Image 1: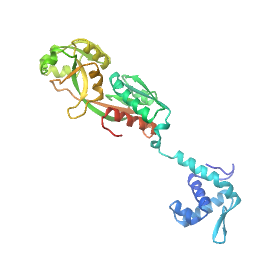
Image 2: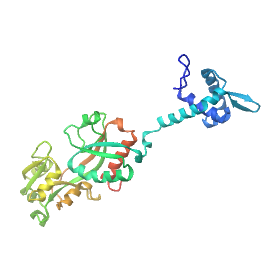
Image 3: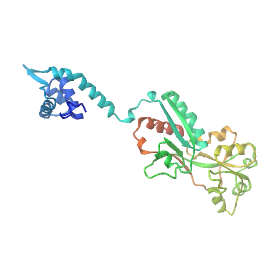
Image 4: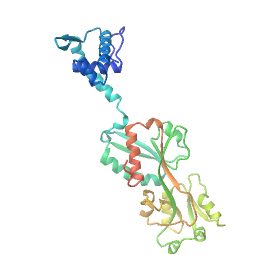
Length: 315
């Protein structure tokens, strides 16, 4: 930094800061106080600067010290170097969202994308109007996309990550049975036998007909009939809203406010019924590559996702 000549030593960051303080204060004592060091240490630093720059820099004039012509010429440049250092070394979290010009790529399911995008874009309009959002469909293995920088954030049930991937849990939901308004199952309390007897539409990216609900029903000696397997929850909800099939819908736990993930089901007029057999809860999280952890823009994105998917969350 700040080389003097091809054959001379150069100023490191600490010497540049000390030079700025000395030329601004024109006093070893005041410069030492400014940098929270001792006058003796500052005197040694001044001696080193004199050797490096081959100039006295500050000389005694009665009771004060005055800068040499060389020091006068260096004053503005030294101050500029220190300002550039301050910008360079400022943590990324200090970014002003209003100044961001960035497109974020998020990989998630159709349901999470629909639940997330409106709230995330509303936050961007208020806080970061230069931010745009690209939502990609889920892949079976999302780790390489994060590692290769093709995706900024993966949101969903995170179960296939590379060792270095950072994962944060966002919300835990239960599964409810979604049926159209006026469905016979909604007329009375749902029973395991009644649930098993209904037609079902399943959701699986891999085309699987069975899942945790089948295992839970089997504990009661029951089996359900799956009439169709669709790749996404939204398609399954539309299917259920148009007929008598039952679909599974993520819903809030009993002690939580309504989950944004169930909003599409309510918009389609589906009734959400408690499932009468125990099912494991579903945890929705977000995953990102560690190179983004300290990036201020990415920190804003993660905070915005928290606020949308965790109602009432402040950060």
